[in-house]
Length: 140
Image (cartoon, rainbow, N blue to C red; front, side, top):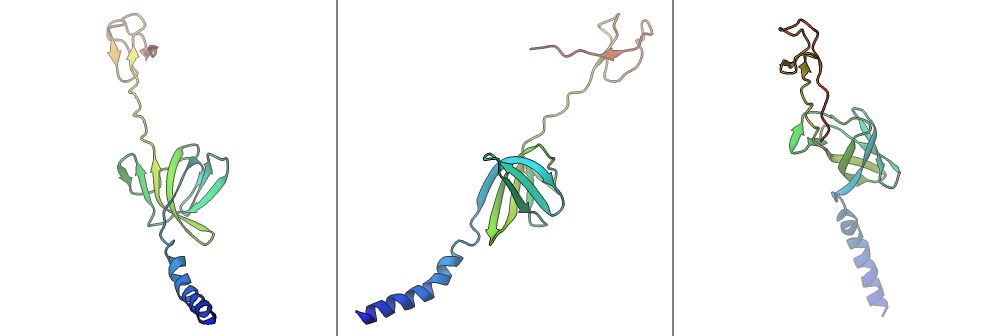
């Protein structure tokens, strides 16, 4: 019985380091809103209203939709999904996924007197000389 106990203890001592290393590289995921960002860190407020600080660096991949970005493009208030690795108490962001920004619609300008006169920039109506005004957006 004593030999069995000793063998189990020895096995536990030798297997413990490999078990501890089995967790290394495991990816965690966090979804939330950016509260602050700079060249070295990203702070995200999670859905549970907890602020999570993540280290970012040269190995962090920034994505907007499917497009890989050359550098951080996150803004405070923007929603993100972050994949990260934990090393002790440090959280290192490996991938930051940002939503695709909606393209800004080009502003159109019209003559208040001649609705058929439309331009993509401010100016004057060629028919009456009045200043063109921004076209009101129509509700769906």
